[in-house]
Amino acid sequence: MTLDTEKGTTDPVPVRIRALIFDFDGLILDTEAPEFQAWSEVFTAHGHVLDVFEWSRNVGTVDTFDPHVHLETLLGRALEREEIHARRRQRSRELIAAQTVLPGIAEYLADAKRLGLKVAVASSSPRSWVGGHLERLGLIAHFDCLHCADDVAVVKPDPALYLMALEALGMSPDEAIAFEDSPNGILAAKRAGIFCVAVPNAVTGQLDVSQADLRLGSLAEMSLEELLERVK
Image 1 (cartoon, one colour):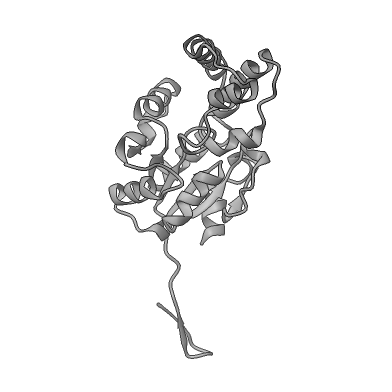
Image 2 (cartoon, helix red, strand yellow; image 1 turned 90 degrees about the vertical axis):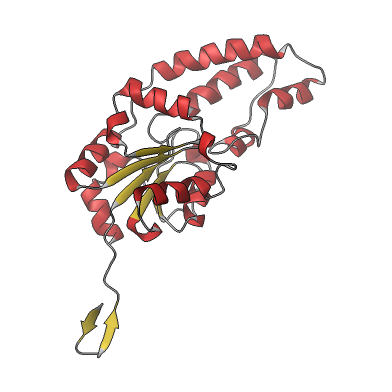
């Protein structure tokens, strides 16, 4: 505690941030815009438009919106699912392979290491997906731990992934900052009691991320040290 000698009162000493917890899809690598584009092309080929707000219900979580079921409902008939999924997956892979790490991510990871901060991933995607892409991008060594859909019974917006990451890092919620791009992810971080920075992408930028404590257009807008000072 610090003493205010003029008022004779005590104020709490600000807790030092010691950990960063990152979402993966749409935050480290933009897999969401390619996936949306791939499904949009399927809808267009069948004479319909995939609404981004319908799609967004599944961003940052799982099993909330099934685009195939939605398209079949619009058409009033069943489709050859395996054939459509195979084409859509191939198209999505092509688009994702063309993506690079999102702006500011590499700098934040390097600065976190320099400053002695712990770093984790909390993602609603499978570990094979997250770990595979991090390996491909040459980023896996920056992370102290990965917590993915395989590790919990329920994913975001439930806080389980964030609580697990905090426990693994040995941190309390007020010692960490979470980085998210979607409303579901932000809600999960806030439910875990963590300061949350929203960094929306081309898809989630159209959604309501007002529950976050801070919104940035990209991590390149503010250095990690500037962010730490602002949070403090």
